[in-house]
Amino acid sequence: MKYLLDTHAWVWWNMEPKKLSRKARAAIENTAHRSEILLSAISMWEFCKLIEKKRIGISCDPEEWMSEALRMPKLRLIPLTPTIVYRSTVLPQPFHDDPADQIIVATAREENATIISKDQLMRDYPHARTIW
Image (cartoon, rainbow, N blue to C red; front, top):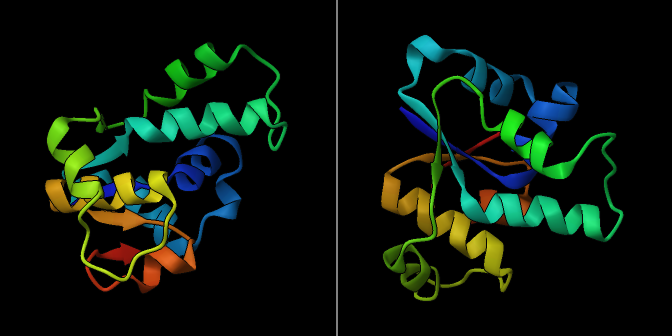
């Protein structure tokens, strides 16, 4: 099984893993029962925007933090491909207007992955699998 981390799940895993649900932590930690963990490139942009807006703080260089956070076992960074970008704009409705969430959902659908997310709007979306 493949899991795609929502941005907050990736950040929390690397900063405050206790914020993750037991189910989310188990999915990330249990490398024997999953093929890989995915992260959309848009999550790195969202992380940088959180720093820019002072919604989170880190004590090191953001580029170093991201480089280290990408070293999770079996993690694969998914680039913004033309297919994902297009499919994020034609998701089955209804879906909310957050472009980053649209890209994350389109990425999960393209990769046939389950999204790890606390976001209730994403979890209620019937056209993507989620856990929390």
